[in-house]
Structure formats: C-alpha cells, structure tokens
Image (cartoon, rainbow, N blue to C red):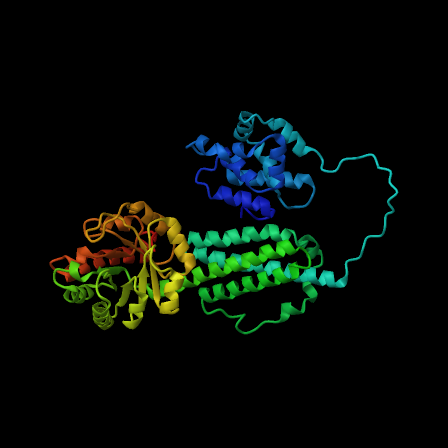
Length: 507
C-alpha cells in the first residue's frame, strides 16, 4: 500500500494526491502545503506563500498528466527516509526531498521565485549540529521516573488508540468495498485523519514503549459473540461500537495528558455518532427497498381516469411504490383517499408513501413519508412517524444528498432530471446530478422529473437504477402497459448487472 510506513502527515499528503485524476506538480505543492507539517514549515521559510500554494494554482493547472509516477515518488521518499537514519517512518520532509528531485516541481518553485537548490541543501543538512556549550549555574538533576500510574494510563491510551484506528479501518473497508459509498467512506477517512494529530498530543510514542501485550490479561478474554460474526454487517456493527468506546476512553484518560486534545477527541466521537446514523439508515434502506425500482407519484386531479383506476392498473403493471401527492386537498378527503391507497398497495404487496404530511401518513398507516427541502426535516418527520417508517427526501444538489444521508434519510429523490408535465422548476439538476449520486451514494435514490419511455435509457446510462414517474403512467391510455414497459427496462439492466454484463454503477 502507498500509505504504509508513512507518518500521519505524510499519509494525508499521499491520500490527497491519490484522489486526483491527474496528479501534477501543482497538486503536489498544494498537498505538501495544506497541513502544518515539517514540509509546510520548510516551504514557508523558503518563501512559499498561501496564495502561491493554493490561491493561483488552480488557474495554472495543465490538462496533461504528470511526467512522474506517484508510486515511484513514494518509493523515492522511503529511500531518502532510510538514508536519514532516524527510523523507518517516512515523514513530510522526506516527501519534500523526493519532490525536489522531480524536474517539473523544481521548475515550478523557480517560477514562484523560490530557490529550489537552497531548499534542497537545507533538507540535506544534518538535524543535529555541534554547538559551543553555554555556561550556566543550572544544576542538572536525575531524570524523573514516570509514576507507575502514568505508565498504566499510557497503556490504556495506546490500547484504545489501536482499537479505534483498527475499528475505523474495518468500517471504512465496508463502505468502500461492499457499499461502494464514497461519501460515507470520505466521512470515516476524515475522522481517522482528524484523530491522528490529536493522538500525537497524548504522548503515544511513550505509550508504545510502555506497551506490555504479552502480560495484558485482556488479550486472552473472548466471548462467543466476539469470535463469530454471522454477516459482514454484524462485523460493521461491532466495530462501530468499538470505535465509539475507544474514543470515549481516549477522551477520558486523555484529560490527564492534554485536555484540549481530549476535547477534540470528544468532538470526533459526536461526529462519529452522525456517521453511524447515516450508515445504519443506508443499510436498513437498502434491505427494505432492494426490490423497489419503479415509484409512482399520484395526484388525483392529474389522473384523467381518476386516482383509483390508475393506481390499481399501475400496481398490476409492476409499480413498487405509490406516493400520494396532494397539495390542496382538504384533510378529511385526503385521509379518506390515503386509506384507500393503503389498502390497494397492501393488496399488491407494494409500499405506500404520503408526500409532506407525516401526521396523515400515520393515520393512514402508510409505510412512510416524503419531504422536500422546504418541508419538515428528516428528524422532525421521524419524531412523528417513528423509527421504523421510511423517510424520503427530495434533493437537487450533491450537498443536499450528502446531508440527507447523514440526517438518516431512507431514500432520495434526485432531480429534476427533465422538464416535468406535473411540476414546474426554475432550475434542473439534470443527468449530471444523477451521475454524481450514482457514483457517490449507496442510499436508494430515485431519479425524478419528466422521465418516460423515450428518455429513461438516458437516466439508466447516467447510473440511476430507480426512477419515480407521474404523468408517464397517470396520463397514459393504459397505465398498466406504461408501468410494465418502464419496469421491464429497469429489470433488464438489473439482471444484466447481476450476471456481470453491465458494470454496477448505480444504486
């Protein structure tokens, strides 16, 4: 792995570079500058400024790839670290030394008015130099012996730090390799990187020296549940709790070493609770909506045949979810119609969702509620509906989708994709937004807005695997045939992905 045997600061530099499609010398300078590391300090002393490192570089970026390999760059930094003679860890100054061996990086510094050769000479200077002793009346005393309790605290911190980092990796691997969710993966990775500088303030270098794994009584204590995991999700649940417990231990015992670091760890613990909520909601929603691909939005006055005949026909055609969307209907009439729809969908084995009205959704015993950006929040709707009901959220930009995941939403409306016959919009998120969500978020997402037989293939090509429609079915001469055709197209690509003939790029 590229990041093995790297210091936390160096690992962050390489992680940022790995996210780049074209990793240029501009990206390398910017990544070395971002953390307040040894490399940052050396660049600053050499004359690099914040504007040079971050402000003007984006406008200067080249569209061509770099003339150097990131893998070779890391390997060269490791060789320089080995020559340094201060351990096996590769630090940010070693990355800077390796960067100065790249001609285009040196040219970049020279173009910014930085003497690259002078900076290189400074890096190659020994870190310990001879000096004339200073006369002093200070009397040297024997070094203080660390109290046994302090050693024990260090052991606790060391063990908890290891558990926490290991648990974060286990959870991150699940979000990356199984969920294929880059949004949640990024949240966990940022937590791990945010933890590193806080742990460095807790004297964990001394903690490693105080480690006594061989005589730790806890290493031989195991429970039956701990030694058996029935599923990958059970592994995740155990490690979510492991991370939280470790963070709490680090926070409490860390107060005896550095109270500010302990407070920072406490803030990370609260942040991780939110990540856990998003991960749980995603897992549950995927299970509940696994076979739900076609979503019908019904408004009675927009159905020429009436809501009842349309819903019944659409359910026969394969609609998986029906949402009742009535903005101006009196509450009593709304509830009466909602109860009928609840009965029709239940008979067909489909889900029933109410738009915007969690109170009436509860009275109609609906499966959930769908809210917009200006409606009740997920948390407010959850307080009314309860924890087992589905909460969907309309989103029009990737930031809204990311937030909905962390809020604990069960599904996303993604759009509007095209011009709609039933609803007017000032702006359209378009197919680009569908692609963003499909590439980043595993939570079930339904593309919505003007989707029909003629353009659904474009939506599927953008990565969507679920769609929500209204007029295409409600206004059709045969709602059953319209629903069946859309469902057939959705199932064809699902089956193609299952047998490997199509890459699974959508959720």
